[in-house]
Image (cartoon, rainbow, N blue to C red; front, side, top):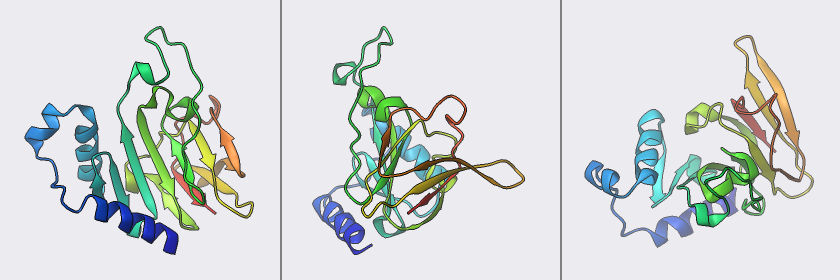
Length: 179
């Protein structure tokens, strides 16, 4: 947890002079700020720490918003070009899209603490399509779906990654035990 706080502090210090964007700025700078504004409006306790990230819980949860760029690995024809996961060491990450946010667009949620996280608290309910577990010591994260009657395990993520969770569990994640 100390590493997460140090990483959060480093990022926060690097953007200390940055001012939050206004609603007028949101309209002119594209979809990233608009998505961040939407997430912040739907959740509590988040702080925008730079132009495309929000942090919660003393930096142990960080959501990154990226806008699409076909030049970054895809094409308008729908062809898929595999992307490498970009989850920091000792973190576990969920990605909104297949191939770790193919075309480098979408949301990435990174979790550091060994704890249960309800994804709606971070604006991410029912949105995970790929994952990367980059935690140390063989830690296994478990991803859950809330059925209305209880929590059901969707998948367990040992160290490593999966570029596609599969159609039966895609966009069903409601919680993660990141440890």
